[in-house]
Image (cartoon, rainbow, N blue to C red; front, side):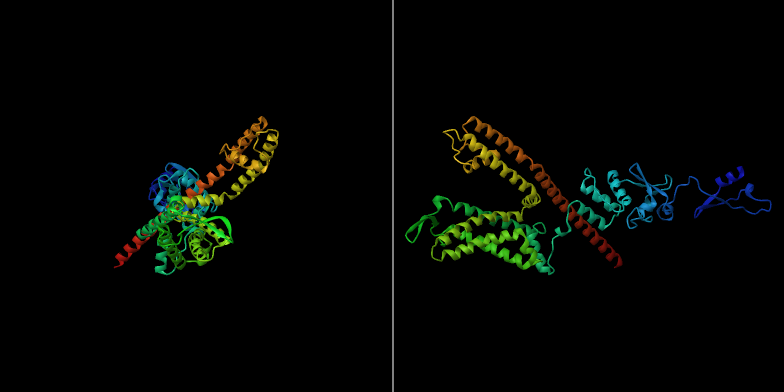
Length: 462
């Protein structure tokens, strides 16, 4: 036995499946005939080689050292995803430490816990909240998790695949669409967006200034000898009116922009379903309707329509949301919080009926009370519950003041309940927008790297 141990210590070891072939030239291990003997020993504490840990022995335990913190898992667990870095022994061979018998990675520890759980759970990926998105993305790319895992990650983070903008197939049409829809795509797109915002601002300012008394001439409108409680601006559609000239210029720009968007859009159906495109159509429609009705005979119906259409012009301000991500995030927040908003309105309606009835009966015995009916108390309750408090209507009786105090307290509580949900939705969409911007940047970097690699390979072939 002593001779055998000495021979084992002086031998060269060759791996033969699950047994070791030990060869020695020691004299103490030779028989009397001088024939060399072979001894087969099973390794007791020999560290696993990468080939054994990765492929040959799925039941073996693999040790992974992440910046000093060791993780252990079965080799079969890593083999569930053979295209990744940890699932492919050839890829991770350079990270194997023979002395320690482990794989060493100088990477982010907390991110690796989520990545390892992805292997253990057969595809369940979850980013811890305290890990930044950019750090987690870098770790996923380092461990070569693949494009499908990255797409799954963005879906779990709230990014939807249908949010990827469609582009026209024709090159010129695609270029025009990118200029009009993506302000950050080029310098020309930024200039176009700036000029469009300028025209919207001028149109809105003109709409407000033309209502000043010193800048308009009011004339009475009569029909069949009966004076109508209405007025019209004299010279509204005359070329001498500077506001009309400004309106024509702005409408021409809006019309051309709208037509070009229709022609260059990749999908006409999606274009018609877009809320921003509906706003664009509403912004230019009142001008042409006003122009047609102004040439017809005056009637009560035409002037009522004109008044409504002039009010619709104010919706042009919503065209700014096309060029403002903040307004787009706010719109998504309201759309996601529609249930909470309806719940808020429902609670306000309940409080409106209850406190209007209470304040009416509480003030019914007072001579100085202005609450002569329950509907007359609606205004007071709305102003009080929303904590505005104009002071035009106030209770005078002690019981009425008590009811008013309760109304104010309940209003504060009702308004405060849905606010955290709305704020949480706003934060969610704001973070999603920043992640989307980071994803677009990372995709651009990947495309640049791929182009650089292809150019280098092409130059080497030359």
